[in-house]
Image (cartoon, rainbow, N blue to C red; front, side, top):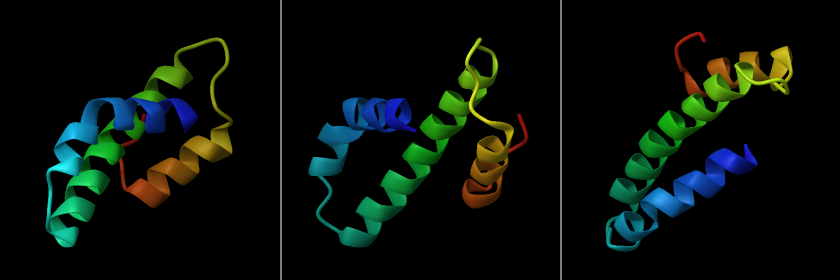
Length: 68
């Protein structure tokens, strides 16, 4: 989660700073973070230190991302 959030801030900060409308900001932030979180979890499951199975299930449920 920490890696996903750091990557999100690194790649999206400039875009988010330029958004004046709160609704647009939230929509963009959620959409982009969901994709980054999905990739972080997917990558984690392919390493020697994957996230716990229960955590992957919660990400799928909470963020409505496709199964890994």
